[in-house]
Length: 239
Image (cartoon, rainbow, N blue to C red; front, top):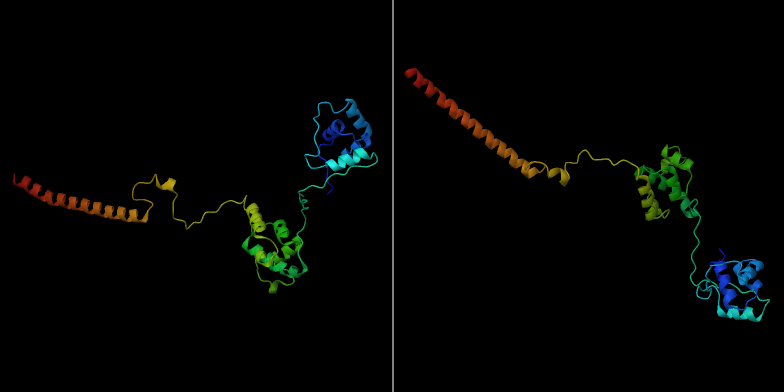
């Protein structure tokens, strides 16, 4: 990617006001038409635009300006940036080295078994395969299905752990959360409203013992009442 001049018209305004470069030189450097540079010099164009110094931005050196001023035929060149920003790579099928392509079916089998939530397109991005191959491995119709062994693609070097975690997170983002039926622990918000002795095993044992004590007390009271009733009946008969 070729270097591009920042704010060409503002740079042209500064060069017109602060240098003795010709209109053709300024037009060449700023990628403008010479007539447009002449209009800037006459005040007919770029009114209200503040000039930008290309020296402070590191896009033009003083030596280039002096050389252009001394030689009307010289064309000033844009300075190379001190910090080069890497170009963004185009997203496409992941390239897999020839030495690792034989491991892709094992990696696909591992992903299909351990992460069934992944879509075929996500598996294809991770290991660089085709959807038809993924379908064959899912359906056990692959020509080498009998010899395939599930192997972690990260261990095989087919993808990074970060890429795998990212795809799994994307796949599980819209999936409903399943609760385990064997879970017996209740959240704190639920246990706060329960009576004392419920929701905790130790407290449950205490509550059962208290119920036993209460039952014994009730039966004892009933038996005492029953034993008292015949005496009262006997007294009434005597009377």
